[in-house]
Structure formats: structure tokens, C-alpha cells
Amino acid sequence: MAAGAVEREGLIIAAQTGDAVAISCLLAVCQADARRYAYRHCQASDIDDAVQESLLVVSRKVRGLKAAAAFSGWLFTVIKRECRKLARKMFKHDPLPEDIAEELLAHRSDETLRIDLARALESLPAHYLEVVLLRDFEELTIAEIAERLNEQQGAIKSRLHRARELVREYMLGSERVMNG
Image 1: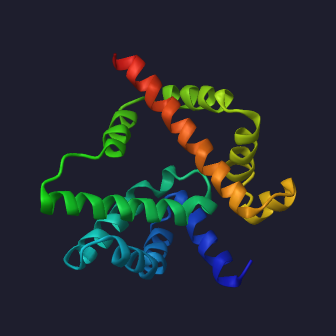
Image 2: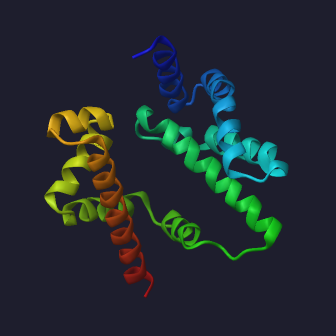
């Protein structure tokens, strides 16, 4: 792992503990990446707002991030969501199904979410569960998973994506049952 990556991971871990200095440093370090990503996903007039809102979300919610390795993906998800919010305001679009789903899940207790997540993982076929566990719990990279399973990286990415979609569908299905 490169020195910069080790330093960034250290900042993320410190920020997860609530260290205000680490949070400030982390925001400064990831601002350029956030801007580049917003540039690709936002209207030019929304880039600054999307970056600012995204970094605010990151500063408030980084403590809830479970794995430092997931930070970059989470940051980009937050930025993409902010870009979509700004675009909807501009064009007055209705909420996207994934935003509605996120809102529904946000109102559930942590314990309920944990139970439903465990059930969702148990419902996965073995080959999907295996890649989720290796990536999200053992924190292996796609390349490491592919090597361990002796498969192509593209196949692992596809399987991981499909597994996460199945978990999401299960979680939303259980939400509908609870509210139905």
C-alpha cells in the first residue's frame, strides 16, 4: 500500500473516532477527489454546492462508516446523491426510487436493520454470499478476491454487484412488509 493511502486510511480511522482535527484533515485530503467526481456527475453550476454538501455529510456521518476501506466508495455515493438532489431541484423531479428506499430504511432502528441485513445475507446463494463476505467483512480488494477464488476480476465485480442488489431488494421487501 502506498504511503499516501496509509496516511489517508489513518485519517479515516481517526475521523471515525470523532477526532475533529482528523475530520478536518480528511475533508481537505478528499476535497479534490470530491470535486473531480462532482464534475462528472453534476451540472457545472452545481459542482461547488454538491462538494460542500457532500463534505458536510461526510463530516457528520463518518463515525458510522464501518470500514475505512469503504470510504472512497461511500464518498462517491454521497457526492452522486447530492448531484442528483441538486438536479431534481433544478428540474423539479420527483424522488428517485432509490432515494425513497433510502429514506424508508433510514427510519428503522439499528437493531432492526442488523436483523434484516443478517436475514438478507442468509438468503443469498452461496456464491453471492462468499464475495460479499470477502469484500465487505474481510475487506479484500476485487483483485484479492479474484485471486483467492481463481476467477476474473470482472466476474467478481458482477457477482458482488448482483449480491448487493439482492440484499437491497430483500431489505426493501422487508420494509414493504413492515409498512404494508
